[in-house]
Image 1 (cartoon, rainbow, N blue to C red):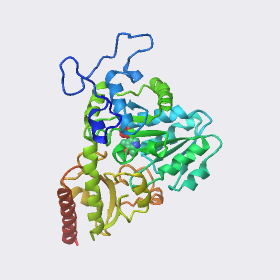
Image 2: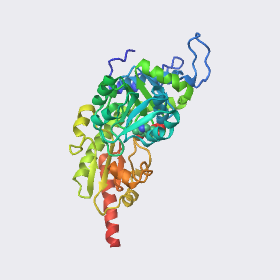
Image 3: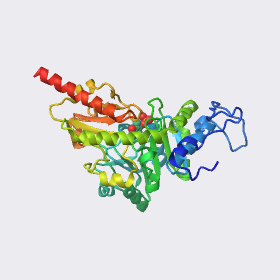
Image 4: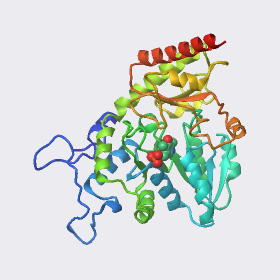
Amino acid sequence: MDHTKKGFNTICTHVGELEDKQFKGAVSPIYLSTSYAFEDVETKRYPRYFNTPNQEALCKKIARLENGEASLIFGSGMAAISTALFAFLKSGDHIVSQRNIYGGTANLINEEFEKHNIEFSYVQGQSITDFVDQIQENTKVIYIETPSNPLLSITDIKAIAKLGKSKGIITMIDNTFASPVNQNPIDLGIDIVLHSATKYLGGHSDILAGAVVGTHEHVDKIFQVAKNFGGSLSDFTVWMLERSIKTLGLRVKQQNENALFLAQWLQENNDIANVYYPGLKSHPDHDIAKQQMKGFGGMLSFELADGLDASQFQKELKLIKSSMSLAGVESTILSPSKTSHSLLSEEERAAQGIKDGLLRFSVGIEEKEDLVADIQQGIEAIKKKQITLS
Ligand SMILES: *Cc1c(COP(=O)(O)O)cnc(C)c1O
């Protein structure tokens, strides 16, 4: 069947599906073989070569979702990110990266690159001139992440892509927070799109996986390194991820809707000091977000009003769980200063605008009224306790 002109949810449901020729089952069969008879000398199927039937099928779906030519699926987001970076950077090269990126990616750059004699420069803000200023003769990669964690700052994807093209530098984006539902960076000129599929692509907090998407040429270059690094995903998990992606469009649509509703509700609430959500007109990057995103995503963050304790509030929540990960169908909340950004000093966090009372909220698919009610009762509970104490 020709899926080239199909809409997003149809791609999610059908592209790449394997036909069960034997029993006519409704879903893709799962092939667990690590050994396949040679079809010809060229075709050597092996899980670490990223070419088992289930791997190839899922790659087609993910490539299509991002409007790329090809894709590879990895055992984690970090496997995808590290393999892609090492495919395009060698000793003596230089990378310009946004400062405000996923902690694991920053650790990879800070802890591994020097060992391989790869130079790096960070760009503090999101301004394009700051990126231009950091470019050197040996710069081979520009790396961005938007929306970023935890303040949902937005980088101008088109401008970055244009900059890369004008200088012959490969551009890479971590598109995890937006998901392919809300943002397709390849359409805006970016070379390589990276995903932690552990997040929205998986969506149920039960899969660890990653993906890269790009042209055949770029993905082949990444594959040449990937087969040496060995970060492929097991076919069991490949199959689960295929199943999860069938509902990607529906889940994220609901998460977009809930997050926008909650962001607006929080903004109106006197017990909330600040709300950070790119869908709010008050967000400093709202205009760029509107240009490059189809929806504003399920991630937001906020600060309680002065005198209301964030960690007490977290403890009072009943429906919204405090948890490290994000993007599941269930709503979760965490304190960046106590978790993802705890290794930074208070001054470093302040420089990034991350206050100690900031809470990052991964909005799930629950009914929005129930989420509002939980937040409301959480605030009332800490207020009551504070009155009793004083
Ligand atoms: C979680 C995450 C990663 C890393 O993915 P893993 O699957 O945990 O390896 C990378 N980037 C972003 C934005 C993430 O949220």
